[in-house]
Amino acid sequence: FSPAELEKRLLKQKIIGLKAEKLILKNEITLLKELEIKELPVHVANEDVSAGYDILSFRKINSKISEIFIEVKAVSLSNYQFYLSSSEYQTAMKLNPYYYIYLLPVDYSLPNEFDLKKLVQINNIKENLFENKIEWKITSDGYLIKKNT
Image (cartoon, rainbow, N blue to C red; front, side, top):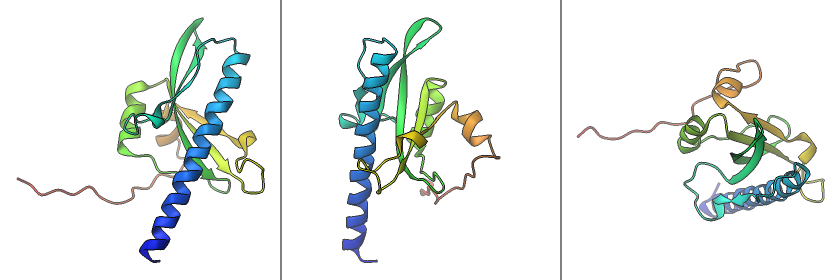
């Protein structure tokens, strides 16, 4: 396809990704109220795209309020396929077990374009994603190449 078509597709992906993040942020605000947690989630990706996660939120863990770090992925309902960047992987390892990947299925037949009821939340990604070959198939996509100096 043409450069213009590529640009259109990338813009569409960016828009749907931002909508997914905003929906999860809104959902987190409601959830924190239900959990009686006074802190509010922060849409980190609006300020720092290199953070390795999109939303900073909170949970009660061992009777203490703890930060959790959420990476939001808008995915196809048919296969939940997504791309995890090297930065996201490294952040997940560093922040384990408080790092979560939220897979939010896109469904254009719904008013808000997402099926929140079919949201999949994954934490401990080494164990629950990379070592879970029954539920997930991981393929490498491309190569990082540099000249030896």
